[in-house]
Length: 94
Image (cartoon, rainbow, N blue to C red; front, side, top):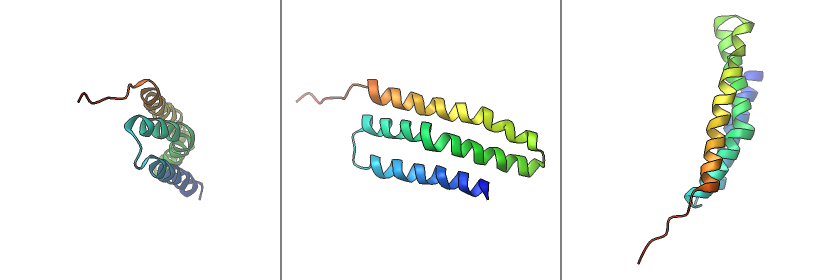
C-alpha cells in the first residue's frame, strides 16, 4: 500500500507541474518543474522505488537504494530551477 501512495504522490506532483506549465515561457517551465521535482516528486518517487526494489529482492536493506535515488532526482530539480532563474529570455531582433 505504501508503494502505491509513493507512486501516487509522484504522479500527482507531475500532473500539477504539467498543468501549471502549460502555455508558459520556457524559463517558467524550468522553474515549475524544478520545484516540482525537488519537493513532491523526488522523495515520493525514491521511497516508492526503494520499497519496490526491497520487495522484489526480499531484503529490507535493499530499500536503502532510495538514499541514492533521492539526491540524484533532487539535484536534477535544483539544476532545472537554477536554469529557470538565471536563463536570459531570448529576444528576437526585428
